Amino acid sequence: MARRLTTIALLLTLWTPPWLYAGEPPFTVLTPTETIHLGRLCSRDGPGKVSEGWLPTAEQILQAETLLPKFVRANGRPKGPLNYYYRQYLGVVISDQRLIYVNVFPRWLIEREELSGISPSNWRTAFINICDGGDGFWGALYDPKTLRFSSPRFNGAA
Image (tube, rainbow, N blue to C red; front, side, top):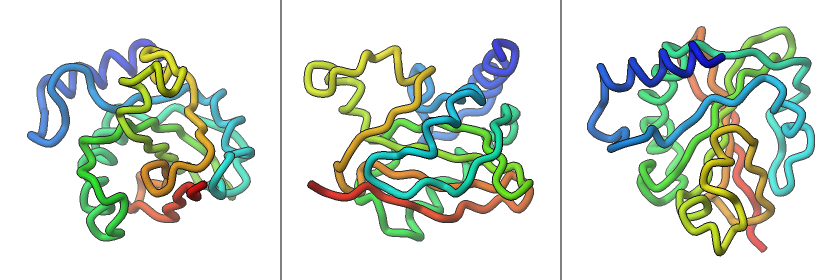
């Protein structure tokens, strides 16, 4: 696990698209044990019946990060630029297919701990599940074989 995260960090320092980040990456890869949270999302439908988790490769995550902006533009949501958001990637197996779930939420949620109560370091290891919040909180599936995102699900608004 530590080796894969180190590989991701190394690849990002060698290849950094201009939209990606300055400093620490705005995304993380969660451990397979975090899949337990996908069956009970608060404000949106989950990705489907997850039978197990797996750890995506650095290359798969970088490919997803590269393709995500196009997917966001095609859906017209969320309204703000992708660099306003943090992302958590989680390998899932659904119907015997290895997919990657991306959990997306606004950066302010982490950067304004006094508002959310979420520790800035927590989001890199623990799945973030927020109730309501509208289309600033959402998730989608990514298929590393077809290089396509699908099934965007957005939180409801209170």
